[in-house]
Image (tube, rainbow, N blue to C red; front, side, top):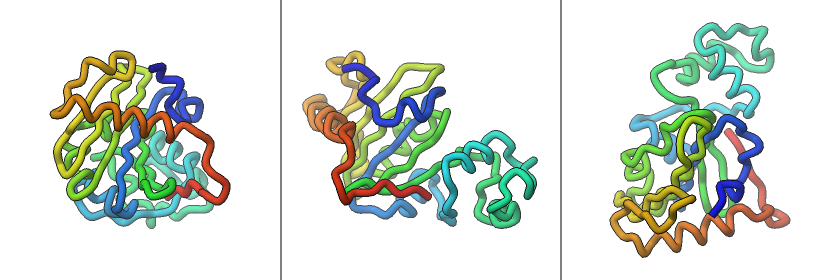
Length: 182
């Protein structure tokens, strides 16, 4: 399997991690990933990249359509954790982290998958790509997509299901389906 199959790799030239989950809202996914309740705030990718780059030094001129005080109150300028964006695709909810490995952490995947199914995919410029699949808090499959037979998950046989998800998610969205971002 080539990492060229990862959706949106050209949108994140220095890499990204994404985590997908079924049957939980994007807000719940973010709270589980962060380990605390968050106040989701709608921002676009360019705004998120600006916030990540400038962090607490951000001014009103940097993001004229957003209030820095609101960003601070929502925790988006908190340097203690990554800035995550969330959205939906079909019945899957997702969070994306640009340039960071936070969402690839096994404990984050386990927390997000409690009571549901979750899959994380990570491709970073500074390290290997990685895919992990979990159900109900248990990591069932975890592997480098270049070496899918070297599975480190609890149930190696489940990696086929994770690969099937990746193969179907890299297709063009169906008419009427929409990606939404927060």
